Structure formats: structure tokens, C-alpha cells
Image (tube, rainbow, N blue to C red; front, side, top):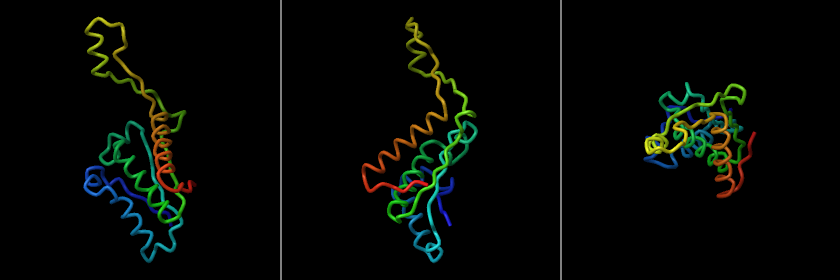
Length: 143
């Protein structure tokens, strides 16, 4: 088996217990079924239609990823990480920032819009979490 945290494991609930996700995964791994657990998994999906859903906001997904990495290290099992959207499916998202609007009102020639790319953001966040994890403890095995 490969186990992971569902979207029901929300950021607000996790704030109360910062190790809650890691604890939940470790309990699953150490249960009677745990001897059959060969890894842990986590999805990191920044597709616009996904992050709009409850439990799939960026912070909740990142907290689940951190917990999953810690559980993988503690249990000595590999972690499987699936990222979405794919590069070719990712379209830039144009957003207007309040700071840019204020600057434009003051007569500055700056753009009032910023462009983000969900693929770039998911890869950047994944790399950041993996670097945090590997620098703070022993390195996770990534599958």
C-alpha cells in the first residue's frame, strides 16, 4: 500500500496540531496494515479549478506535502509526489495587484497586472519544500 493525506485534512485543522499530518500518516504506517505500506504519496495540484476547491488551497496542499515528507523520513519509506498541471496544459493567469493599481494611479507607467503560471509555481514550491526537508533532517527517498 501507499498512503497519503486526503483533502479533508485541512490547513485550519492542521494549525492546531502542526505535526497532525505526520502523526496521522505514522499511525497508518504502524497499524496492522502498516507492514504492507511501501510508501507515502502527496498531490500538489495548482490547476485553477482545483485550488478553488475547499481543502485544495495552496497552503493546505503545502502543509500536507510537508507532513508527508516528514512521515516518509521517519518511516524510512519513499515518497511519491504528483504535480499538476503539466507544463503544456498550464496557461498564465493574469491578476491585478493592489500595489500595481496604486502605482498606476500615481501616474507611474508600471503594469497593473501580474502574470503567474501554475506549472512554474507548483515546481517552485515543490523544490522549496524538498530543500527545506533535506536541509533540516535526513533526505527523503523520492519515487
